[in-house]
Image 1: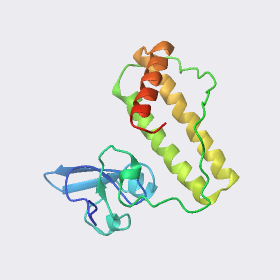
Image 2: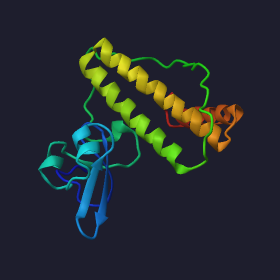
Image 3: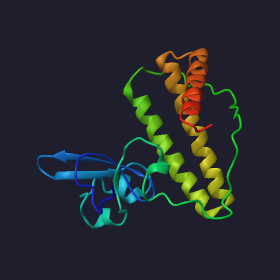
Image 4: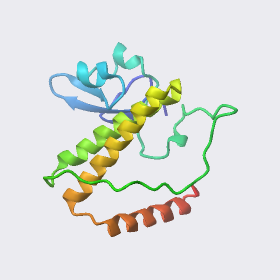
Length: 179
């Protein structure tokens, strides 16, 4: 179900599949913050009214279900000639974690921030195809991997645990028909 406004607290997705957080505040009523994307909205001016003109630029909205993006109503079919990639195994180089890391929520939040920046860089590259935008995307990819390594080190997650979790993820995706 789509809507021209974000009319309740929670997580929402806009027409470009960007994530928004909406919360209630006694003084302001509902406020919305776009996670990543437009720096004027997400970082410069702070929250916006989810039913105002600023939000209307991003409509329609749908509640974020956490489900696959393909299930969202505004996700268009791929255009003829759109490149698709068959499954492959991706190997990452070793990633050395930073020195002193604390086991707290801020490392997880930093990972979310870097993943949002990667998403926006990938969208820019997909639109432009420019080498500079691809380089920016790869830089954000490396930043995201770095924060994941830092989080694993701080939380005491072993390589074996990550391998087991990836095996479990692969099995879940098989069960869901994605592989």
